[in-house]
Length: 417
Image 1 (cartoon, rainbow, N blue to C red):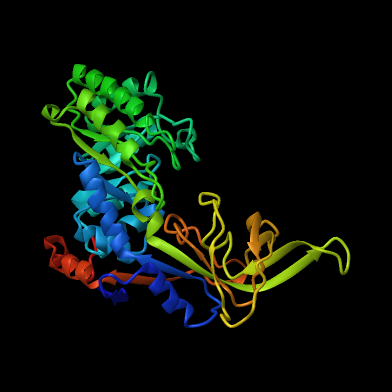
Image 2 (image 1 turned 30 degrees about the horizontal axis):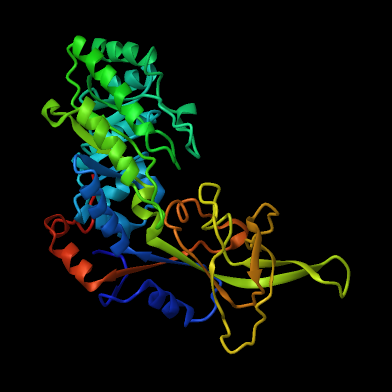
């Protein structure tokens, strides 16, 4: 696999042992992400088992690390791309243009032309002006109408920005697309990022069915249903309830005999648990109500923060695992109210506050799990601090399987349009 440094480990080596090997190198200025490709492979197999009818088109925006994309190409997954750069990344790493959906409903004219040049036909829309642009620049495109269906239990409701009203706008847009001679092939929706309501998929799929029926009255041949994202990916969260909701809805509204192809755009599901962050304590402050009085709080300054791995989409639910930088140091078991700050000069660079933790020392390592979703793609070099360094790990068995996979053998070295 080209231009990616892989750390091959023996089967059976635990994540804890990998973390210890990173810790053994000593404190570093740069935070470290341990990327476990075996976790990505396990997620893919679980998806195919639980949602056998639904083809995964990985949402590149969630984590665009080349090792992840290469792995998913080798596994035969498709890709949800939202920009020229994401499209180019997938193609250069060996992806197939026929397995990409350009899932952005407000594309620039230049990007539509680029998609056509690259042979990407499948793309979304949610308004008349977008249809006018596509008619002018890529009239052969296969179009997917995105409707609005927000879960009330999503962290991020995407319907504020994308997706048309399914009752009033959608029928009009189907008629308008037909009047332009454009090929509408399907319906898509996204229930929202961080969705905790599995049943929302059932309602969305039911709504999509009504639009398939309306399209049939217009003699439009819809044959694709895109159920978007919104699936959990943390190590302690299951997609079983989501799969049950989706499968029941498909069985009722889009049975196999309907011939409708079903895809999804999972992002967080595939990568959240694949990355573990190893951060360092670089400084600390002990807070007292007055000199010599009892400690009221201890504040620590880490080498990672909101400008790096932590973000508003990924709040911490529980304290990290602590690995002492100096194991020989005698430590108190007393716990104190704790605040963890990022390294920047921004006073909003707050990771967590209020946790009760034992006192930490300079050079201690803090291990945060479930950091694979958005932890690197949203990172910046604000204040000159380093973005997380990614170390890619994969077992020898998985490595051999990926190399032997028929998709993997066809990977290009320098793919381009």
